[in-house]
Length: 194
Ligand SMILES: [Zn+2]
Image (cartoon, rainbow, N blue to C red; front, side, top):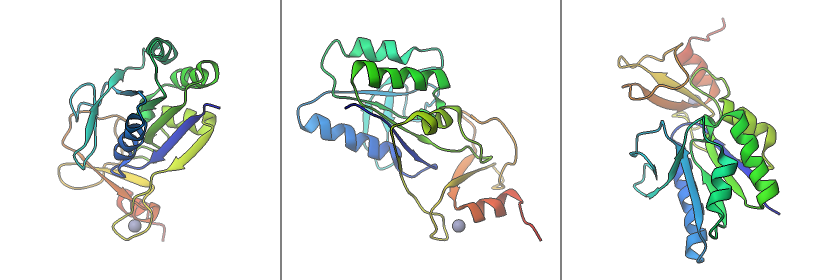
């Protein structure tokens, strides 16, 4: 029975590495996979999923306008054992439903990998829909500098200070993102109750 999976994490937890490894496991067994990533992510160049440890693979890209059910149906004209979606936080709610219908009606498993919350601690649209609709959820874990599990992320400006407002998606800026536990995120965000 095909399922819709959501592997969620904070930044720099290695979710692209986990995705690429899972896809490789199919390919090693002689099966084909279909890789998708958000087009606004230009870190690895268009149409590529890359991990910080140096591995990568070509990928098809999606924008908010794409019908992903149609894209997957077209891809299934030739054998495909599993669909992988990176940067799944950028899916729209409609697109998550398109993926759910692909799982149910086309019988192909879909594995989504994405961030749970943005730098302000708010759910991304795609992640909120996946948390609601996925059959299976798994956390890709990483740690804060203190050793606790990191679940939050801060966006730091060029001066190194955490930004407390701004757009959810910032492309091409020179901000850096640091994953933290909630306690240290609150500290950086100025939430210091007496
Ligand atoms: Zn911490």
